[in-house]
Image (cartoon, rainbow, N blue to C red; front, side):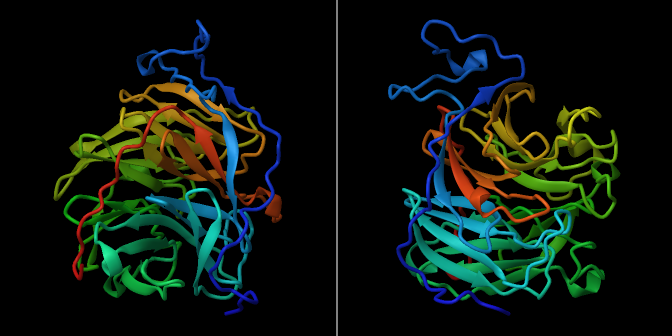
Length: 380
């Protein structure tokens, strides 16, 4: 595989920051009154004493080549970002491998790990999850959408990746993302990883790396058959539901959907519930295309939408209460909370590369994120 020269970790600038700043809130939200401060129950989150408004967008960091930041995870004073420079639907083929970038909490690049991928790869990395081990046993788990989960040792820079799990060979699905595509990663408290696969199914990977199909249902089928189904995932504040996105649904055609399935050992059709549907507007430039998810402590769910380049906010009942947009959003994908703000990766899924769009944005939302499960894993 090819390598960029001087691919070594170390202090590196976060890139130039453009002074332009714009934000917009739609979805029929009522006007903000009395200096613009309303409580969360109103559907509009409060401004902070520093006069930042809900939806205020700034650049947190830039991603160097190969660009196309996808997954994101926050770990104290470190932020990890995965890339997917190869993308079938954007017509991107990548022979420069993928990366996991490490930033400090101010957005400065401090480390780079190269993830070996095939020449002319048309699918890269997405989901990131952290375990609860401490010290030298603390690990970052990385979803390679080609059907494997890698594990990085965070005590080393750069960390040589090891394969933690992969699609079992006896399923006949291994080695081809069009048969099994491992997207996001979601830990439960017991150390199981839930992995949405848009074929459509959800895998469960045990603490020892053993993978099996946990749930499937024809209602989750994507518009393309081999793609468009389950993608982003997160466990809700009650700990009893796994929420996940359908990017481009088959029924109703071209809608985007948020579903939830009960976290039991053997869920069935009765354990699946539709939470929200983003309708397809034939006059819009593109379908809505829901991708990454992030829960706030309040139970509000933030959803990336590729089509309109916006972030939607759903209340705990599944109603859309806010919409955030910015002209610098280009295929917003991964979401992770940092304090009262949301970090958003710019996937840049356009036909041509646009390095100026390889950004991670910081969006003020006035509420904190739901802590993710970080279980103790074997070996720690």
